[in-house]
Length: 356
Image 1 (cartoon, rainbow, N blue to C red):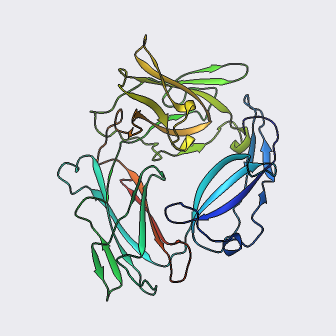
Image 2 (cartoon, rainbow, N blue to C red):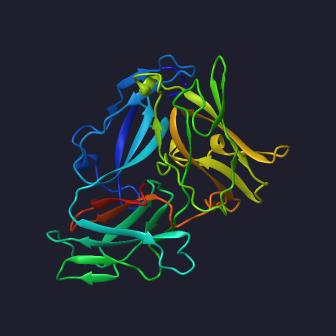
């Protein structure tokens, strides 16, 4: 909490269906305790230029599998919403056998990846295997990069096995490019991809090297690519949780003005959100896009993308898409058992493609 003053927070948990709409379950059906929890574990920042409070919570044990929404609010007023965060609880009732490969499509084979998989549901009752399961595939832990509405292409009733290999390429997704990254683990020195460090009395400014478009250059392999994620770490301290500082990171992208669109820089560090804080402005004199964002010290992956005026996101505008890119994929399998009133998560599998 960067307001730098102590505040009291509480949270509630809500059960959701596979499509993240609220389920009709009452709280007593999925919680063991009263569903209103205080966040009592916190630490004040120590020896940092940017003061903050770091809060930690441990999600309590829940009765049911499925999708959940954690809602954090200030004081005892749920209407004073601070943020929400999705999480999932799964109970492994079926087995998933995935295969991620280059797309079998003619025009997609250089830019897309394909996720084929089988489901084995031996010992688990499914009344209508063709209709009852809901599948979600997520790329790099991002809810804005998902595949849904897949149906089995082959039902092997006697083997209790479902095959998902659609011919319409509905299980294909843009592969993207390897993520760009920078290293601010040492605030006194210049880390990877950092051009210079400026020490000011109230903040540290890290200006990254000027980036250029990778649209036509092929996939760029990075040793520190975390598939969009980040690690908080200050190498000068023993406890990065409250001793890592927030660095004012300045991003610069060399490019002509992208027409009819806003340009953003993002990653897991800001949950891939489109906000004023990560929207870039164009410097006509230098022909560059610029943005400055406070990001906690560590190793951070990021990428550039454009959002058209009609709301469509173009992730390949500056990065391109190459089928050899390393990505993480998650497969979620939801089912609503007979007489149940909400979707439950009965299968989960993480697949690493191209990991180096």
